[in-house]
Length: 156
Length: 269
Image (cartoon, rainbow over all chains, first blue to last red; front, side):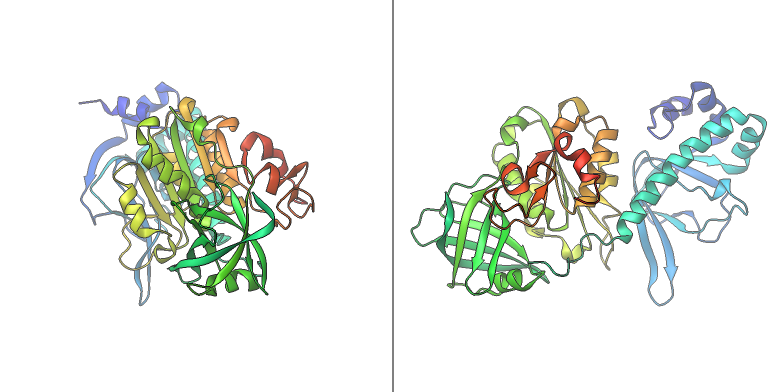
């Protein structure tokens, strides 16, 4: 069985981090498995952890009155789930539900924040990782806002 | 090539794909369809309504197949053409997909919305000659599950190639991926050094798809896009489809990313 440190090194999202940072992060990480349908994060609930998906799919969702849980996007292998752990008041804006059995590495947010406070180099490098995820999700969201696949009025 | 005068064709079959998109199987009156290659397009002429450029979406023996979305008066008339009725066809026009170049390579096909139609003949060829290619993946994004094209075929293709689907807006019962198709590129298991990518869809989608492929290490010369412009003459004379120095009808519609990357970033074009 691979060590947590080795697993972090294989994750494309964390590969840019120096090995020393990944070793530090291991102290706040543990392996977890979520059965299909289980919640990784609860909407409006405390964002105590964030996750790196090793295998499986996770749906980011929100509850809409009279419509139930609506899936906003799905995330898969190698992707990060959750960033509310980094921003006060540390509550999840959306829910995260395992679509299939999800094998993840779970990070304790408070533990990692403490390490970032005491090691600004770790904090900056980790923020760059999270910012990359922010930027890509924002690009994706903006592209979806364009509703590109809708018909083009005034066509031939 | 029937470039100047339309070839008389009969609508042999008309099939509804989605709410506003139809697939027409056309049979030439003389029984001899012109030789189309995947990625090329025809000018389809609805008598009394107008002429529009439509990519070939399948090339069966003795016929030509086009998939058309009703977005304006001519395409609406095209979609409404009854089985047995006549249409005019000019073509084939333009440059197609680099299928020969893709042999012995991994192939990633990226389609968005109606963009799957011009890529369907590529997938037919990849599946038919599967042993000539390495890993093959179709990454297809649509607006919603009910607006995905060729649903039956997508399942058939899974036997030969990887098929990954995603939608922007899920509907009840959909348990697949939700999100833009570029996300599938980021996750795809690909070897950039031996990958050829072919992408078709809205231009913004193709631009982001090309960016995602480049980030994964795929060379700009190995990324091929099918551009959409307002083709009129289809023979490189009228200039309606001009993109900088390119006439898309003649120099495209399929072009490599390195040839158009800068042009696609110019808003005036």
